[in-house]
Length: 152
Image 1: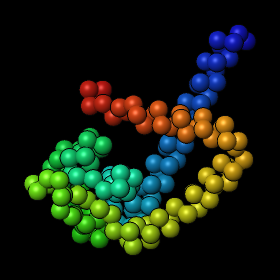
Image 2 (image 1 turned 135 degrees about the horizontal axis):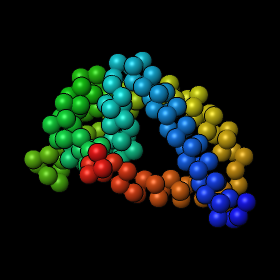
Image 3 (image 1 turned 30 degrees about the horizontal axis):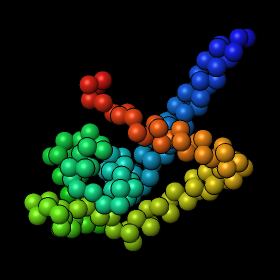
Image 4 (image 1 turned 180 degrees about the vertical axis):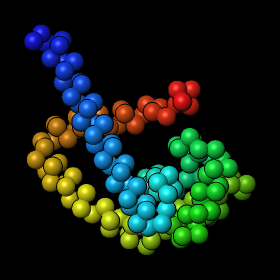
């Protein structure tokens, strides 16, 4: 097999494995959402707010491709269940910052503990160089606009 064909084969295998991982983790996240009484989109938005360290509704809309109206409805549900709190935005009086309620989140993240242990075990066998490559790959994937509305 030529090196070009070998490379295409490896890329195909990587894409296939990523798809398997994404499908399994999406289904797991749906189970988590069901278990805690949320829908899958609300759960993912909660993860986004946590990753951002707080966010305005506009930032959430931009990150999720949801409409601002959809974000408002979703935030109402998350606040009702105690997962988030709206706090004044000190840099813009017309807006607010969404913050996660850490105590409630700890209970939610306990569900992910087994998955984190698996990831920790797998990553513990990687060299620093391999970890940097994996991190760089995911960083590049995140920086791309993977939810372009034009493609929908």
